Image (cartoon, rainbow, N blue to C red; front, side, top):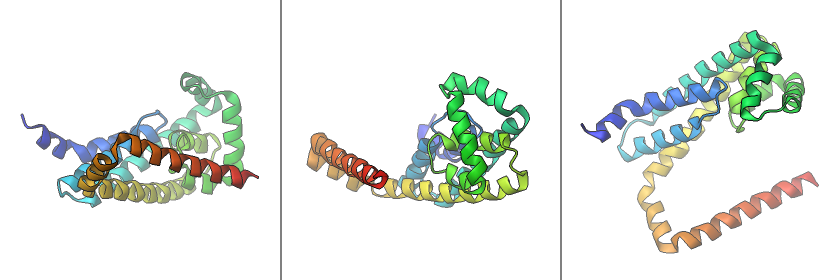
Length: 195
């Protein structure tokens, strides 16, 4: 049995399935799977279009399932299953207000925000956003997100030799220092924006 052939055959559908699960409301590392599938695709000289296509299809199908669950089950359903994942009623209340004010933009942006990617579709259904409107913005967000994550993963896979050389040359300690500096810069920027 050839493991490389198995990954070649199952990589794209597995990434799409991971995105579907995450978009349907189950906390799951769908984004990491899509990144890995894109990096694998670059390393094996496969098509990035298939990675993006499966990511897009998985995101739209999963979002539709999440919307349906939120629409049919409402807030009691979301509260009952949200408690399993430590989502408190006050978090749900804040999310409802956010969706009431910014429904279209929230569905579009939810793809790019950890947590909202998982629960955004349910919240849109719970808020009774018209399905056709949800579908348009969900598809636009899913496409933009799939392209962005797919291209990032593909670039990562295409430059694996360079990344390995950089890590080897600066060492893990140097990489940790660079990573820490980036995190400090981002936190400083966020803090400055709040003031």
